[in-house]
Image (cartoon, rainbow, N blue to C red; front, side, top):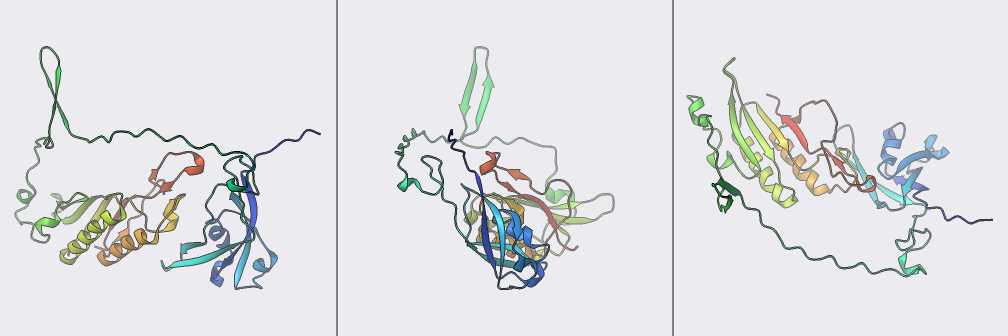
Length: 293
């Protein structure tokens, strides 16, 4: 008999999901179990709702995925519900021989030490201005940005009423541009904030604080458009990790400013890291939000 060593990528595991409200033990349970792995089935006691302290389901887990100790989802009121997870057993894989049932320290195959990557010199971006001469193209490194003139009039000259609802320091920053849009057809106005948030959690706090300050003096219809670089709920990210802090800061700002998502069409996820399927991450980073006005 010829022995063939097959590579195992996915294994079925029974898991226990605790503290799930009774109303979610029906058709919603596969979606909650899907936060751990691919839902396969649930045991008879969970199906008959005999045992309410926890639900037992079988899910398919990838050998290289991270096993969460708890998952969370939003209920119909927008509240975050935390569900602790307990595994009947956890799949162990070896990064040395790609086998299962043991880790790299117990493997009999020697582990090759990874070679140190070459240190790359840090590059600093600076704008380049090119001027054409008769002989060659000469590159002049400029320390200040090159401004291109436009034919648009200044914002204060479009309307006879000056901007007095928003302090000057809140009109523009590195993460937003705030303006008043004036419609010549119906003489209506609304305030518009174009957003391109930073990647870092702490850097985005300044943006949330600025939006809260604008909301204190904004009594007009208000619209947000742009890339917020974060999500509002776990369902808006597929793959990767979502921290409570980044969602809480965003949710708090949206609640204080009285903003809501404007219905849209198309794909739910607006961004992807374009990595391999095992490391692929999808997120909803771009959106449009507005107040009731």
